[in-house]
Each structure stands twice: as structure tokens, then as C-alpha cells.
Length: 186
Image (tube, rainbow, N blue to C red; front, side, top):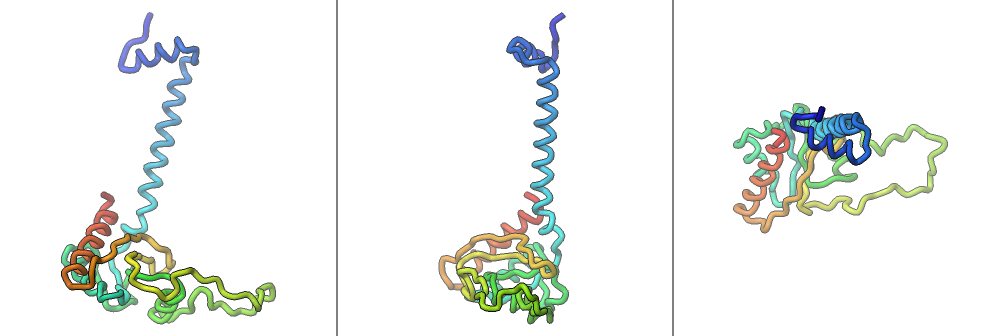
């Protein structure tokens, strides 16, 4: 008796090619499990952004933070707070030592690199490692950083065409829209 159904033709070809009859089903199960695992990992990678409800904006070049605050609140993307203690995350246009110092000042903590507990294995003559962007702003990338873990949860590159109000408002609108899509999982 010949098999029938939606996969019958595929099974006949697989069987005639010398592949064991159960191998096709087993391969399909493995494929579907791998695809499901991939989809779940994609969903989990953005899960941290979806947990953010309030944001504090650090000053940005050309006053972009003001336009961004207006866009985020008018589109109900995130609640912008003026008290950094109430924020789940921080929006900034720079990372590095100056950013870490800004967080330390806002939250009355020590920057991660300032742990001077007298480690005997530490090389006292070694220069601190620095990234190439120390203290530089306005390169077009905006970062959403978890205030507790200091993990970058999201970033987008949006360089304003000019520093005029219309250009800054358009850039802030595009940044806000991208963040909204990420939060809503679209």
C-alpha cells in the first residue's frame, strides 16, 4: 500500500533515495525544535527592553534630549522622569568613563573601575584601558542603558542632518519610533 497524505510524495522520494523512512520525521522534528529555540532566543534578547517603563535622559549634544523627551511622552513610548532615582533606564548619546561617572554622580555609587580594595595581584603601573570614544558626544548613536546593571539594552544610529529645531525634532521622532517598535516587539 502506498502512503498518502500531504507529505506522501516527499516520503516516497525520501524512501526511494535510500533514506530510512523514520529519518525524515526525525529530521523535521529536529528542525522544528531548532527553529522554536531560535524564535524564543530572539524574543528573550529584547525582553529587557520591554521591562523598561521609565527613563531618565542625560544631556545630549545640540539639546536632542529635550526633543526626545517630548517625542517619547507624546507618543506614550516611555514615561520620562526628571528624578533619576525613579528611572528604570537612562538614555544617553555617549558611553565610556564619562558616562560611568555621570551614573555614579546620579546614583551616588562608585564607578565600576574605582574599586581600590588593594588587590595584591593588580599591576600598579598599568594604564587604564580606554575606548576610542572617551568624552566624545554627538556621533549619532543613542543608547538605552539599564540603570542597575549598566547593560546597553538598545541602541540606534540616528545622526541629525543639522542642529536646527526641525532636524532635531525629526531625528527624535525617528528614534522614538524605533524604540517603540522594539518595545512592542514589532
